[in-house]
Length: 115
Length: 111
Image 1 (cartoon, rainbow over the protein chains, first blue to last red):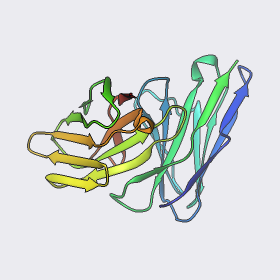
Image 2 (image 1 turned 180 degrees about the horizontal axis):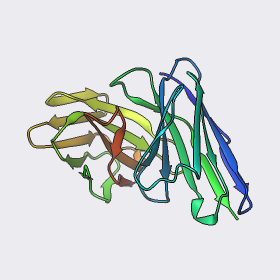
Image 3 (image 1 turned 45 degrees about the vertical axis):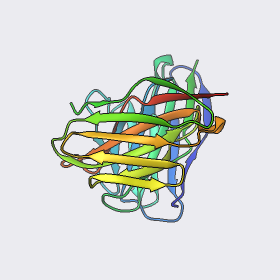
Image 4 (image 1 turned 90 degrees about the vertical axis):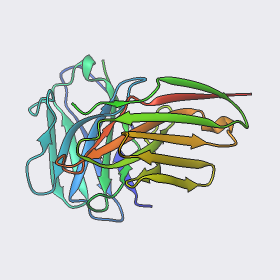
């Protein structure tokens, strides 16, 4: 199956700093990528849809100025958590599709801990 | 919102069969997925249903009834490694191909 690479796998940062998470589709082009957040023992909550060459579409309640998404190429999307706070500590997962109506392939996830 | 409901937890015995149910709002339905997720890992794809009926893939099968807004994932010959969270996800038309996930069912397989 298609491979989606995400890194870093985990990051610990101080409150107030910014953290960038990268998501790459390794063997296919992804015009659309999705960013999810998952708190312990909860399901995945969609944060935003990342579209190559255009602005991301954010879900209701997600602060676009805090969670900056850039999809500069067909194989790379980045999520930057700006001015991170302890409540931003979570598991962040990206995903991509090989085509319309196809299944999602997920990256390995990034565990963010903000001290 | 587009509610997707699954049981929170289930427990089953090694070697047995377990059925995990998922219900969803039928309006705009455009496909249902099941994913398996082990703690601290990303979800992995198990099955996809868009038409009514049963899809079988080894020890795992998934069933869909579009008119009832109902699906189930059937796991046979349970193994300890099947202990994981099972996520039901639905694609709705007009949603830009995004998936909406249920809360997940934490399955515990015991000896």
